[in-house]
Length: 548
Image 1: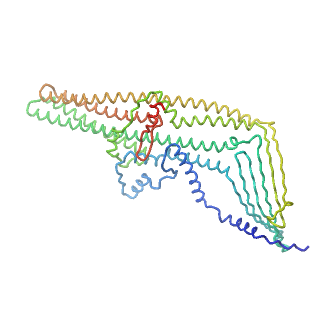
Image 2: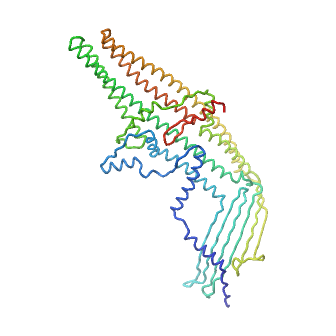
Image 3: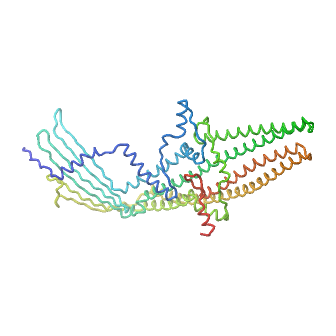
């Protein structure tokens, strides 16, 4: 049998083959996919954070040269790294870069954004391409060869409609006879549209909607964590500042007792004072020295704990910048001048964790709708158009086109899995409503407790400041009376002891009051973290006070 002369491909067909053949060359590297995932996920995260009023960069990559790494590298080289005294902002940055929990929270937000990119991809036009080649034979001889190229696309719409398209060409050659290549082209398009179950944007796009909301939830969780984490760091710095001030008070007290002891020794040598009073002064001096040693030890222990919290080697010399420590006691924490009810209203409106619980009720309500839809009968319309040409690839006419269309009804005869999912969705809805009520109760309890703490520490601060003033007057009066001979050394020593105790108590009261104020604003979701550290967002307070 004589072979049929081969039909030359048209220029368009040759170009199409060239494009298909270039697909393998265009494949991206793993590094390219890595960068592409980061670009898309970070863009989503940036926009979600902006919606929450947060700015700044975001990355899940660990810093290439963290302080811990530089410290360890310098230690290995035998040249310990000199660390300048740290400010509050420095401490926040170091804690963030070394905290495992901080990194985990960033990764959770990134993964939520990555899940969203997948759901968005489901509604994008998706392309696929396949190239293939096959050789057939018997024994040691080849009998035939085939080659194929297929390009496909699919598109899902919000109504549930799914379009599938395919364009392909197959080549065949009988090697045993030396025939030329025969080409067969095939094009098809299929459209499927649900008319009952699975129809409608609210049903079809539910996974996309939930993925969008999950990113928002993780963004809220991340920002809430950042603010509470910053509060924890600041609390530790506050306590270090308190201990530094306590140590200073003890050192000043120690110096004062040294002067009293030296004065008594001079008067005793002149025969104007009993040795008993010299011993009393010396004994109080020794006690004061012991308190200085203990205060120094407590400060070093606080610094070691802080280094562990920051993720730094505990043997690293570390100190807090003195002006930052002094500035903490002058930190401007706005006074709360609105009622408890108004404060609770602000907290319920602003608390990110509570807002998520509010939205989760809506999620549960949508889930009930989705599972209810799954109980319905399925009625789908499907249409397919196919064109097949063997002699003239991609040159179709009406006789080459085949089509089909039909309706397919899936009767809801057995719906046990769907029934169970529907009932479980209702239970989930009730559970989410209970969780919302519980969240509101906890928010209210948090602000009530914070208000009580703030009121108690405010009164304590006022009491201790008055106690310091009284103790200072008592010391001055005892000193004057001692010089005038109307008092004994014990009176001055007791007044000096009362003064240092009052000073230390006043320091603690000031720190407790500042932290109680910050804790209240934390529980109201009014703490903000920026490049300058922690600040209080006062606009909601003003709006609530004006009845807005």
